[in-house]
Image 1 (cartoon, helix red, strand yellow):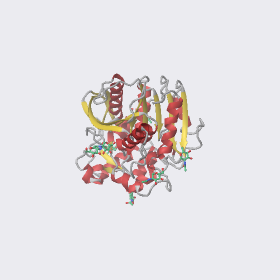
Image 2 (cartoon, rainbow, N blue to C red):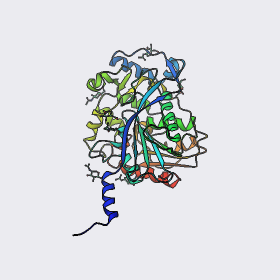
Image 3 (spheres, rainbow, N blue to C red):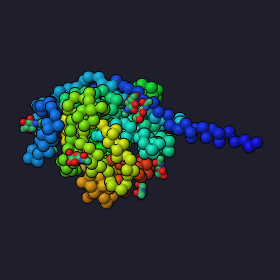
Image 4 (cartoon, protein in one colour):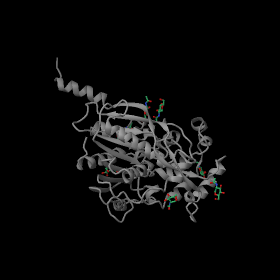
Length: 380
Ligand SMILES: *[C@@H]1O[C@H](CO)[C@@H](O)[C@H](O)[C@H]1NC(C)=O
Ligand SMILES: *[C@@H]1O[C@H](CO)[C@@H](O)[C@H](O)[C@H]1NC(C)=O
Ligand SMILES: *[C@@H]1O[C@H](CO)[C@@H](O)[C@H](O)[C@H]1NC(C)=O
Ligand SMILES: *[C@@H]1O[C@H](CO)[C@@H](O)[C@H](O)[C@H]1NC(C)=O
Ligand SMILES: *[C@@H]1O[C@H](CO)[C@@H](O)[C@H](O)[C@H]1NC(C)=O
Ligand SMILES: *[C@@H]1O[C@H](CO)[C@@H](O)[C@H](O)[C@H]1NC(C)=O
Ligand SMILES: *[C@@H]1O[C@H](CO)[C@@H](O)[C@H](O)[C@H]1NC(C)=O
């Protein structure tokens, strides 16, 4: 009889068990300055069209026209999170990655239950590289608290939730995660990257490093994106999933809008489009009205920053982000916003659109991000 050496059987067991994750909900008390906007309650899809006609009107800044003032938000909301750590345990001074999804997704973006989790950022970061991760449903989305879509679910409130959860990780006060982390990296996708950028601008010591995926500081293509979305009330568009939501929750019209703005034709599994359309998440009027409020620079952020964009990103590059790492390109121009960053890299992922994770080669893009963190002293 052939006996496996002890280490081999241990290895077999651990490689099968893989990452250890738990989902739970955390009450978070926000501290944010939200806008008060004079916009009528949307009654139907026609009102949704009028709202976007206002927002995309090139003559003015609709957010500013309807802004009546500001209100301090200090309520407590539940934020639904998923924490994952390597099965083999933590390293000596472990790094946790804080993952924030974009519009149209929830935290499952980072660990997609599609084709046996073949498109999992978390599998790459945790199983292949040994990082820990905290992926969150943004305020108002997924299994986090549903809230007033105009007055509460705005970028300042969502940023506050991210900041408070980051502080809990640093102090060792996050429920179910009985340890403190001295190294926290923030990784975003799209609106998640806008929020991550705002975190670095407003709380420059909250994060030790940034990976901004599907991101730029060029807002020239947002109007074309809203046009392609032809957005409807979420409750009309998918009544079974969104029938309970207030009318200020919106979603793009259909799979064609999704494909046009998120995908690079020929480079995704045809089955992933209907999957992502069937599982899409809505966005809110309050988010739309606060999208353009970011500071133009993050002058005090000192950590390393990587911008990682698909070469065909429609929303942030108008469909053409290449060539890479040139200050004259749209992703490269983000460098100017980070004058104190100790490293900056703009990486262009080939054969990929805005919804990076929906493309065949997504996990190889994720390896590039892990290598960047390790190269700049933020290894697991
Ligand atoms: C659109 O803008 C017009 C003019 O400012 C305003 O009267 C109307 O209430 C707005 N409607 C929506 C749905 O934003
Ligand atoms: C935990 O959250 C993930 C989303 O990241 C979801 O896919 C999974 O089904 C959830 N698990 C449970 C047991 O709710
Ligand atoms: C998972 O992805 C690999 C390539 O990265 C591919 O060879 C394999 O067929 C995929 N499996 C499924 C179930 O999609
Ligand atoms: C939300 O909770 C339900 C029920 O536990 C679960 O099936 C689903 O996967 C969760 N979704 C997310 C995004 O965590
Ligand atoms: C998707 O929605 C757009 C905008 O409303 C519409 O022009 C198009 O015909 C729709 N496509 C399909 C396949 O339903
Ligand atoms: C539009 O107005 C809002 C509110 O005053 C402001 O935060 C934002 O920066 C403005 N957007 C642009 C593109 O000027
Ligand atoms: C897959 O991604 C890696 C990492 O960015 C890249 O080097 C490679 O060229 C990509 N392959 C294809 C076929 O796009």
